[in-house]
Length: 357
Image (tube, rainbow, N blue to C red; front, side):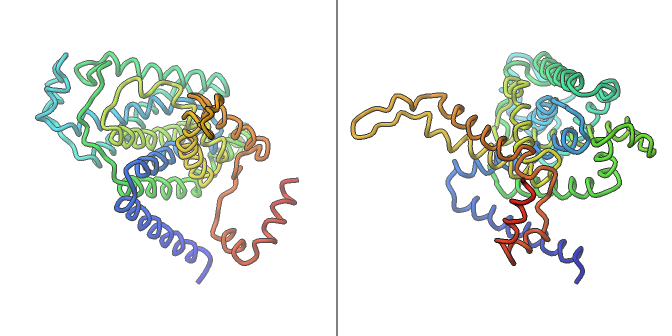
């Protein structure tokens, strides 16, 4: 068996094993842990989507919150039961063209991704001619424009009141499958000629153009694919919450996903997965620092609301000092590396130490 077939078999086995773990979590673990697991998976999807543009194509985009909002509202508009829509849209009646249209969750998610990609294509035509900080500011501005449009389109989105009564999704298995499909599709894309073009643009745009790569086409393609998966992630996020509101998608939400890809490694698919788990689970489990601490009848004044973010920030700064390019950098966790580590872990650690010097 050659290495390619071996890697495919091992990947399928790993997905099946992880799906079994998701089934166990769904059946045996309490709702709080399930919610954290679901958030980790959803944030992994959105982190992967952001890494396509920022990490692989080298374009500094900050528009993920806007595309998430599109996805969440598509799920909200089309999955709320028809008989409950009058109660949701009590201030302004729902638009007659939409009031009787109902879609299952999978169809609403697909529509979320497609609409997000179309809007990204329209936005990308003027915006992707910019670079660096200018591109970041422009995409951030468009993200806020999307949120403001949603706030004012009352007959479609219910305005500032948001959409409630979305059928809740708290099934780890469903969200795991969505994450696995996202991971596989993005990995295949990045290992194709399109992915190599993205990386060439990231390294040197002038050299890439000289080699015959259409810069605008590939930048826009990366932007649209990123928006597609961000829309799907936003739809899952809205379904997990059971309600969507414009305030859920402030521009500051994008910084969470920027943190995920910077911590995991800009230009690493597996790094985005690790970053999503570390950031999401870390923020949840550090809540102990927000609670008052009493030792032998004495209250410790240091433990108070807000300390969690201070501790988390210190830990992040430590990570950045030790891993300047993120945990994975631009590397991937491959089966070749895993097998080599299992065979001789000490040699792999020594090699890693030499490379880091």
